[in-house]
Length: 259
Length: 98
Image (cartoon, rainbow over all chains, first blue to last red; front, side, top):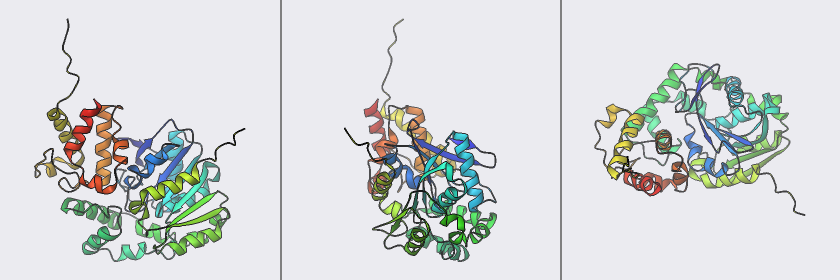
């Protein structure tokens, strides 16, 4: 299993089309893993790009660590990953909390980021995730998995339920994830976000309660375009081919004029 | 000395290999409780989630080589087809690729 040692953490990484000229790095959301991209969205984009997927710390098959779930630590991990893989500059796509990681990356290391695609990035000052963390219980988890998790349409059996339960127990009770996410509440008002110059695509599901977050970002980031597609917050799972095509259209360099 | 080289693995041999991979991915303690057969489906019978299928795909790729574009094959399926996917579908696919 390709697990890469970084200075602070060991991350599970998957690469598609390693020979691709330009690189696209895709960042998943909280309580999820790289599988959200692996089967449909990433293979489509790997026709044009070297695609790098990784599991965030504490998620998927990456190392379980107790601290460092804030955006600064997360982007330091990502910069370290780029260094280790020899990637000078990459396009970034991030979903949900991963979208915030991508934004923070563009703000902190603008020269390392090409184009920026944010899928359903929530405004941390109003996101429900924090409420979700507070109301966490196993009963709630069953409801959450059935309605919101990336595994939505894969019916959760007993072993999966236990596995998810263990993940939530670990992240909620043994790590700093709650306080780290709390600490990011002011992120959308960070001047560095408004100063992002990158060409930015904001993709939101029209039925998602994150749409206002998308509008906020569209008003703050100069070169941002907001696209609404049918679906809700789970749109990458509901419509992977739509998300894949939107990203493809946005990232693909326009063909050189013939003649 | 001439030697007959058996260049194609039988379905049984492929099944044994895949069975081993499944055991490695989901753990022996769970596999012991299951009756894994070629008719077992990944999500319903084996209760594998997507990240476990990623791990399983890696093992298939590393073992059977680059002739088998397992991820590419899976990426042509929609989620409902992946949910329906049975071990025997993969055995057949690997045999065809040999």
